[in-house]
Image (cartoon, rainbow, N blue to C red):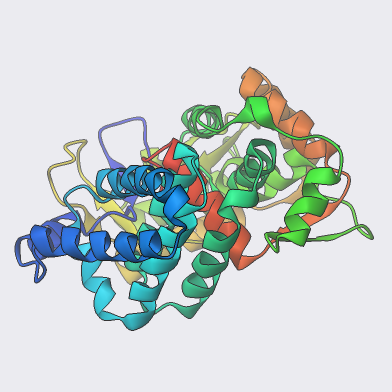
Length: 364
């Protein structure tokens, strides 16, 4: 949560265990040389299965695949510990075979990203199923189909974490800017093709939720009604913050609902991972909130929810978003989708792998 002074509450990030990961790398049980031997052996088996006349082309493709895999893994060689699980080793072989069938460097990057996703969750059967199927169909996707799949996934899954509305909307725009918006498909052919490939399922009976309605629901911390300025509710909120030992400047003016105030929180239903900081020095560890502080925030968020301002806030959200052309483009494309797609496990794996291929800073 951001605030107007040097006090803030922040949501613990997904990468909060980076130090732990670094320690794991230092105690890795598989050497770099052994990793290269394992990957090379999988690629050699793919070469052995090809015709003599195509061997040179296959060797070049597999060299490209290996380069992409090593580049993505970087110094996280501990991921290859997952090869102790036989099914992960089989996935490596399947990826090598798929890499041999395509001369696209983008496909090789995708296959490498999918392998990393599999190695990160070696015992997750849902991931295993999705990655295995995704590897089978990578070579059959057109650039436009993959773009549509990725942006559809991104709209549904990526959301900002900043408690400041303007910053959050800019972050969302930045995510979309890193995606292939210039390749977005039109019509229904791309949906039909992805359905055939088992990347999506779709319904023609219902309508897709409009982009702004979807964002209004996803960005609940931004779109709550809030409490009126100088109202009895505001006084009650300030009292609750003081009683819980939280700074009162956590209550800020509502950017989308003038005359009201809200907590500078992106989420209004997630409190367990919040950390409290007394200053802006990120090197100082945050302090987990007490049960009393969590209950105070939960009470304030519930008090801030009122349907009376929905139309007004939604219109102001639209105005803020439409200041950024990239959000207008995504809005227009999303609202033009004639069917209601639903991503399968394979579609989710393909979309998330492509998003991370294009923007490595995106979370899993």
